[in-house]
Each structure stands twice: as structure tokens, then as C-alpha cells.
Amino acid sequence: RYYLPHLQGWLKTLLLGTGATATASAAGLAVWYRSLTSGEPLPPSHWARQPIRQIAGRSLDNDLQLTLFQYQTCPFCCKVRAYLDYSGLGYNIVEVNSVSRQQIRWMNDYRKVPVLYAAPANSSASGDEVVLKDSSVIMSALESRIRDPSQSLAQLRLCYPGIVGEEGGKLTYPNRYFVMQPGQKLDESKLREEQKWRQWVDDVFVHTISPNIYRTLPEALDSFRWFDKAGDWEKCFTPAERALVIYTGAAVMRLVSMRLRSKYNLHRDVRKSLYNELDAFLLNGVGKRRFRGGDRPDLSDLSMYGVLTAMEGTAAFSDAMDNCPKLRPWFGRMRAAVSAREGGGRLAGAA
Image 1 (cartoon, rainbow, N blue to C red):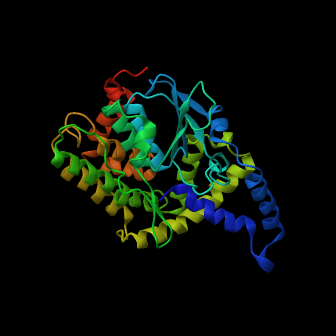
Image 2: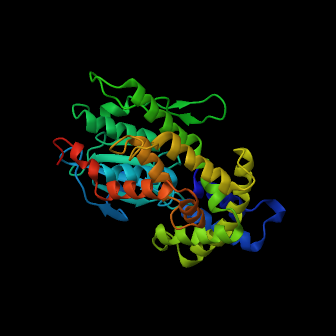
Image 3: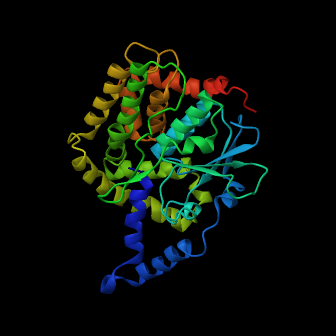
């Protein structure tokens, strides 16, 4: 479901080699890989104190500091950033090394991003931290806190229990699309529509991205070069490591994209699947409104906008803009709303 974790598994196989087929060069790369993943994991507070970027904004509470552990071009991380920016929240960004994942090794049983770490900025006491996993859980929990300031983030975290499935041991969150608003009169039909489209973004639309941005080897190379630039990889990798990730990654992800096209039953011309799903959202979801949520973006708008920003800079994104007439106006309105942090006015009593 993520670009770089697909690559991480393939790179690990490549770098470690197997038995008699392991060449001298592969053995050398294995030493490099082990050097990245050795040593004791550092706590999240360590990484929170040295973010790659700091985004100014308001706080949910007087001294609560939010730190987002992410991959810059992961669509699910882009979703969370779109929500944080629209909501006017300040946060720090820790870029996770996509090969070693060193920055999230403190989570012994979890190796995915995004992860949101919330802790008092002026306190080092253990137990004060809140860790939220899964992009939709993060958005739902923060939105619940904004709509009802009487609920603490620590309390809200308990509303989103994770369940490990019997088959495959996959961790899921049954309540991930629910915003907790106790005692408030709600439009159930409107809520169901928002939840439906949020889930559609995660379960349907996102699977059109990788097959499209890695449609051909040249497009895959262009995409990885864009990720290198957008993700500030020079701060995470040496020049040799970057070259390995870009060129090996492009070749690997081209093969992976072919498997994903088959797995998710996409059209042989994957652009058609991309355009069809975009039209489904814009025609059936947004319709004649400014946003799917009406006059203002809702969580489904922010989810869709976020995953689309992960494609920016790629040929697939340019083609989508040119071939889906309703995309450019909606995307422009979303960009303006997020850039202006129009949702920040909802932060009652925030610092």
C-alpha cells in the first residue's frame, strides 16, 4: 500500500543475497544494510527533538507537540499532512529512512508510516506521550479532539483499538473512519457518506497510484527522481545509497506495479483506471458542489487531496489533470483551502 515499503522488502532481499548465489558485491551491500539496522532503537522523543522540518501552527493543547513520522511521498502520509495543514496545527516532521526505518524501530511490532507522536513539549516524563498509528485513525482522532475539546487525545486513542486478524496477522482499526462526538446531534446520512468516501480513497483509489506512476521504466525513473527531490533524500542517504534506491527502486517498482495492476484488476491501460476512479469521485462524490463536503472540505476531500499530492511531479498526475476536466478546479480549490489553513478557525481555545 505504500511506495517505499514495497521497495524496502525487495532491497533487503537484494542486499542480503542467498547462499551460494550471493556475490561479493551483494555481500558488501549486506554489510551496509546491517550497519543501517544495527544498534539499540532510540526513543521517539529523541527523534522529535531533531525534526527535518518544523511546521508552524497552533496546538491542540497549550504545550502539546505533534511529531509526524513519515515518508514524504507516501500517499497516506500526504493525507495526514493535508489534514494537519488545513486544520492550522503546528507539527514537526521526522523523515523515516525507507531502507533501515531506523526512526520507527522504537515500535517493536509496527513498521509502517505515518505515525503521529504527541507529547508535552516541556515534559520528559514517560507515560505522557500518545502514539497514533494509521492515517485514517490519526485524522479521525484529531478531528474528534477539535470538535470536542473536552476529550483528550489520550482518551480518544482508546476509541480506536487495533485488532490483529487471524489470517496473516494484519492489524486493522474497525473504528478508523468514525469521528467521536458524544452528545451531539448529527446528520447520520452525511456522516455515512463521508465515511464511505474516506474508505473508498483507502481501499480503491489509492491502488491506482503505483501502477500509474511506475507504468513504464522511464516513468518509474522520473518518479523516483521526483521523490528524491521532494523527499529531501540527500538528508537521509549518501549519494551512493540514493543512486541505489533510485535506479534499483525504479526497476523493482516497475515489476511490482505490474503485479499490482493484476491484483487489483486494473485496466490494461492503467491510465483508464485512474481516470475512471477520479471521475467517480468528482462526479458521484463532489458533484456540483465546491467540495464533497459541501461549502467546505470534509475528511473525504482532505483524504483524496492528500493522496493526489503524492503523485504531483509525475507524468501520471499531469495526464490526470489534462484528461479529467473536473479535477483541476476541485484540486485548485483544495490547494487554496489547505494552503490558507482555512480549518484553523475550528481550534477553539487552542494556543
